[in-house]
Each structure stands twice: as structure tokens, then as C-alpha cells.
Length: 185
Image 1: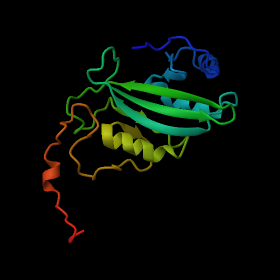
Image 2: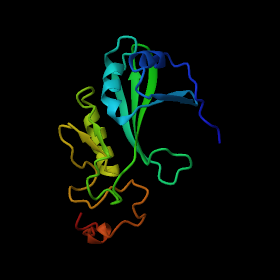
Image 3: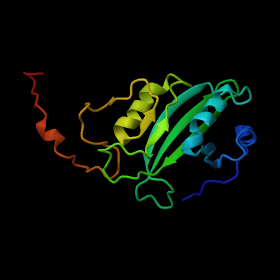
């Protein structure tokens, strides 16, 4: 397995280092993609800067994704939220990652205070549905989100199904589905 490079020449990194000298940012490059790991408490400031700074100009949020690193060798956080940013003005892409560790062992059934991030909807309105999906599938809540509710499962769904500790066969929710046939569909 190829290890990611710990040094990178991505032009945005110098701007981030100058603007946030004591933020504890970490950067890595793997297969030509640069990722910046940001502490959760600095996330909103970093995202705002990346959009507003003329030399960075990350004007498009392509995606927000959740990752569960349960039992992953060398992982420093259980969950990650990854923001895929694009600067059309400079023809650049940058991934911003936040690592989170749950403090409650409830499979996401209860609200865990350690799994909260600030929303990016005020920076990129298009983050709304992506953040809802991460919330629905992983249980990570986005504070300040205008409409944080489930988007792929029903509102009373008992857990978050993309967590790696969620049972592969489910927890009985499929047995209550009404079966459809050609005549009833």
C-alpha cells in the first residue's frame, strides 16, 4: 500500500499556513489530491477563508462526504467529514477533512455532543442536502443547518446505517415493509 506524502506543493497551503499559523492544520497528498486536516473548532473559519480569499477562491463545494474509520489501521478519528472544494478561477481542487471521535457508544441512536460541526450552508448553500445525507447516514449533526432532518431514510429510523457497527442485515426494519406485487404497485 502506498503511503500518502506528508509534504505537498499545493499553492493554497501557503495561504492557509499564513492565515492560520497556530490552527494545527495538517496536509497530505495522495495520488495528486491534496487534503488538509482541520480541527473541528476551526472548520468554519477555514472554509470561509478558502471561499473568500482571492488567491484561493474555492467558489464551489462539490461534495460533503462522511467516512467511518472503525477498525481502520492507524486511524486517528472514528469519523471524518470531507469537503471537496473546487476553485474554477484557479483550476484547483482541495479536500478539507475534519476528524471526529464519538464520546457515547450508542450506535448513533442518541445525540453525541462530540459529533457536531458547524454548517457550511451559510458559505455554500448547496451544502444543505449533502450535510443532511451525512447526518442521516452517520449521525453527524451540523449546527446552524437550516433544515437538518433525514433525507434518505424515514424520520423515525432507529440509527445511522452507514456506520460500520450497524448490523449488515439491519435491525428488523425490513420485516415491516408492505410487500408489493405487480397488481398492487
